[in-house]
Image (cartoon, rainbow, N blue to C red; front, top):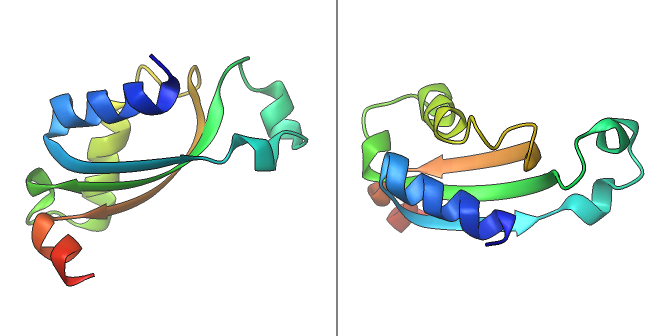
Length: 94
């Protein structure tokens, strides 16, 4: 399973995400010093995550939920993660 599929599966299972869109941006960062020092195979990703479990939470709390769900992936498969999080209602309005 590739990293984007693993991230999607984990977010669906752990926080009940109904929509997970992930873009692998690793190629744009391949010459950055931090990227060169990162574990082999780790990547830079942009993610949009929609979950009902985000309702009533601040954006910071939502992001913490995502980072907690992906804790095992951070600094191994994920070097950097840019997040946009939405409740289903917010997603429909965007």
